[in-house]
Image (cartoon, rainbow, N blue to C red; front, side, top):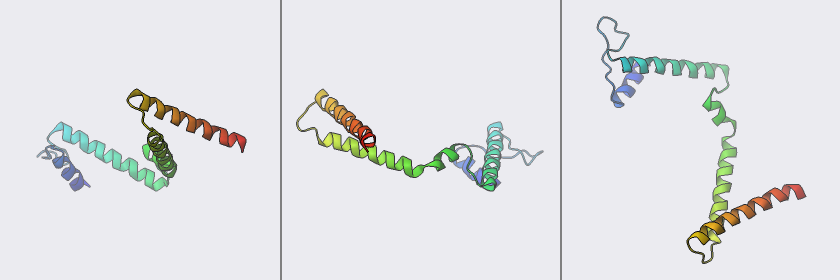
Length: 116
């Protein structure tokens, strides 16, 4: 574990020299502080792995990555469709037309479930 930390710290430009009187501590305070943070993060991740459920931001990310990808794809497709329907508009007219097309598509989607 310490070797991985030291490799990361050296790549990040930190001095990984240890104290001679206390070899388990680093000479530079910032490196020691990051070592303590590294250990806490590993302990936190290990506790989450043992409990079987993700903690913190991982929990939010694990909830519905497929749904988020689906929403991103849908929005991207809607924007591409709106831009493809520009016909010959220029400047501000293009932006206004894209926004109007997106609003119309949203209104249609909102009305469809109500009609079903």
